[in-house]
Amino acid sequence: MRIQIKRLRTSSLKHDTFFYGTAIIAERFISILIIPLLTKTLPQEIYGIWTQMIITAGLLSPIILVGFYTSMVRFLAGNQNDQETSTIFHGMLGIVVFNSFFFVAITFVFTPSVSRIMFGDNRFSHFVYLFGFFLTAQVLFNMASAFLLARKEIRVLSMYYFLKNGGRIGILAIGILLLHLNLFHAIIFIVIAQLLLSSFVYIKNILKKVGFNIAIRNIPWKEIMFFSLPLIPYSVFIWVNNFVDRYCILHILNINQVSVYAVSYSLAALIGLFNSILGFTLYPHMAHLWNEGNKGGAAEILSKAMAYYLFFTIPAIAIVTILSTPIITIVSTAEYISSWQVVFWLGVGIGIFGFYELNVLSILLANKTLLNLKISAAALIVNIILNIIMIPKIGILGAAIATCMSNSVLAFWTILMGRKYLPYLFPWRALAKIGFSTVVIALFLLTVRRYFEIDNIYMLASAIISAAIIYGLVDLLSRRSFLLQLVRNL
Image (cartoon, rainbow, N blue to C red):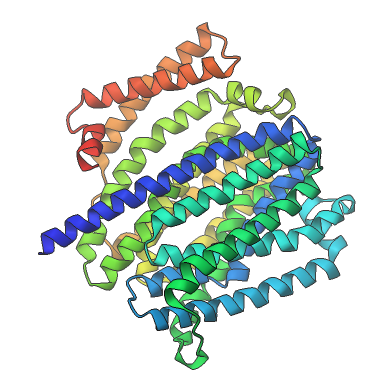
């Protein structure tokens, strides 16, 4: 019976990973499509405004959500009592809605100050009015997403996630290219569409399933808040650690340099797609095992996830770095090109951050959120100091190096502490084999760059596909092939 249950859970995790992975890959592809759409049709500073709105929403979302996105999964995973689930969810939702209205009021009262902080100039104050509603739409979708994640309805969530991001690119494309709207009016339609989608998810997947129940006294607020409140500064620290470089570049250099850096970051962020998929689908399954007292099972799937993460991430860093200049040239314009070193340091930094996101799950399961706060605060201090020192000297390259160094502090400290609560076998042999295979495709791509001009999408696709095939062949010729294991486990 135990074996059958284990197989069912493993199968569920595989299917969840596949469906969510498909949605994430589509989302990252869409994010790449946004780059030429905005960089080739709008002024450089307008693209900078778009990226600043996106990353600032990422900063403020955990504050508005009060850490409920993570705590909802932690406390509702496996809960079969619909009335209790509804009570907890709607209690959290009420707080989030109040926080959202409060922030919208702030944007209207302190518009000039917010504009100077976000965009470095009062000329873009009208975007501040819109930003409050943009953020509200984002956090409401996040609340609905957290509910579906806690219920392990990953396939449904994947569909909604794709609709949200696909709708964004569709609205931008139709609005800017066909209707000739400016970015401001296009964002208005994005906000409306996302609010409608969140309302639909709430009615269909939440209200109809668990109903509307709210009894403040029946909600275990003490336990929830003890878990959630440390997540607010922790999430802010993590966000600032990832994106403080943008604000340092904005205020030390200018918003045009933010645009150049943002394009390189978007390219390097493709590497983060692997940990986004694994971490998102892994957490509810690990939480379920942990809540049942099966720590060995949680450690086993974490160890396997680390091996697959390395298998896909390390070669991705090599491919993105070596082909960075052709990719940026094709998807944007010459004024957005930065050196390959910027993409390399960002890629390595984002890859290391993936180690953190997978290993932090063990600390979250152990309810050691205060420990997370200390680690993230230390990494943030390192990042800010390095940015202030290095950006004036070497420009955006300094920001990329600072990101890599601070993420190293974050990841390796988290790995060290996390293994105390959930020990697992690190795949050292797999790492060596993956490193060798990556060197092979790196040499291949460097040879291609030397003898061929990659100046169109067809040449670029051919180079990437060829590198992937070579990487796969090297893996298949080795003992314990990752690809064969992956196919057998499907």
